[in-house]
Image 1 (cartoon, rainbow, N blue to C red):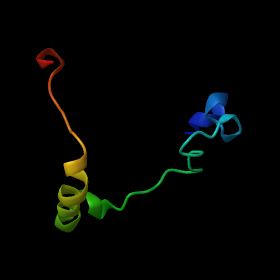
Image 2: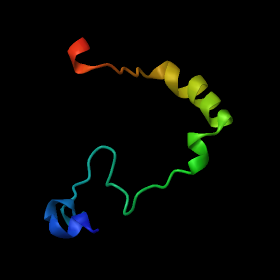
Image 3: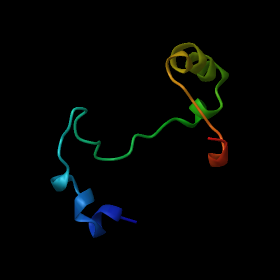
Image 4: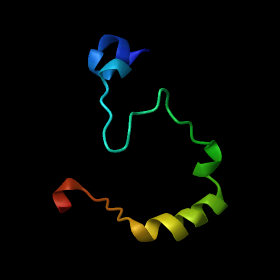
Length: 62
């Protein structure tokens, strides 16, 4: 299904570049191993999670 075909705002000709540049022509595929690899999970714990906050809760608990 081509979502961009029905919505001119989603075509590349209408995309303006910003501070991070234009979006890629097609989606970036992530290797499936990243979802189940213990080595990749260890790298996330070491390099990513100390630098970000991840919060999850029910709306009525906020």
